[in-house]
Length: 293
Image 1 (cartoon, one colour):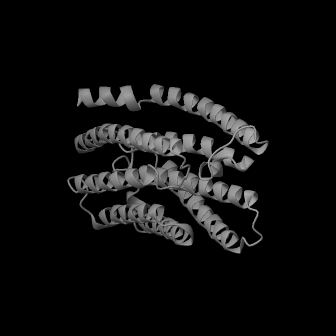
Image 2 (image 1 turned 45 degrees about the vertical axis):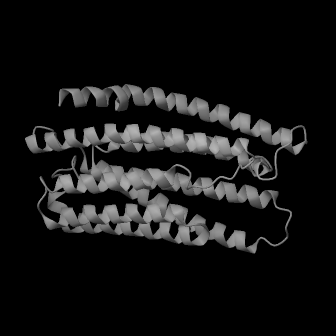
Image 3 (image 1 turned 60 degrees about the vertical axis):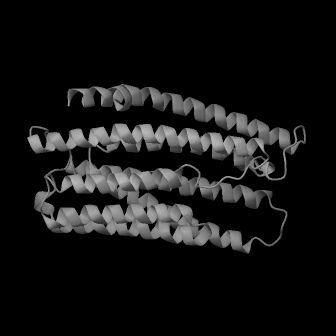
């Protein structure tokens, strides 16, 4: 257990997180300025890109895609850090990530509309409107999860079962961090190679489809591990509902356009409803296993 705590502190501890946060902010600023410069050069035809690649630079709004991608990468790291703390908190982090992902899609869609020379953009406007509704629902859901977790507070770690459960989740978080790095490197390398070949297409399935597939397996494993320590039906059903919302999020990532936005909205409504129902029927037991739920 001591080795697990040491590894967790070394790769997912507070000091490492602070350094990565500062690095993320600086990288996002530099990435934004560099992307904006490329857009500027392309607009004045000082540089030329292929027809497929030009979609990344034909509008100044495209430059927003880079910093949001960097922030998303950091938020995924933050999600992995929250896994040992609270299942509820980690689900809330998932909704935060999806909220940023939807915002990035909206900005990309706006840049396409801004750069479009077609007079018929009714379909894009409709999709944009539904995605904005999905963003509001997801944003509210993420805030709801965060607010509930703050009200619950932090339980003490003097319970032996709770300590063992947290240690198991720390082991899972360390493993998930390794998988995250592998998937990120693979996604970045394959996308970079495609970009060099003249294909600059971007979509939310890059990295996030694979990562959320792994994340679902991790959530299910946590749910199974919790059966050792939590026996009442309400907590088990609630956590199962959270896993179901994660599965819907994963399906939504792979679904384009309006169908994806509707699924995102459904996942947000489901997650909020499950959390709210659990609060109503378990008011007297909110603090029990608050660190392990």
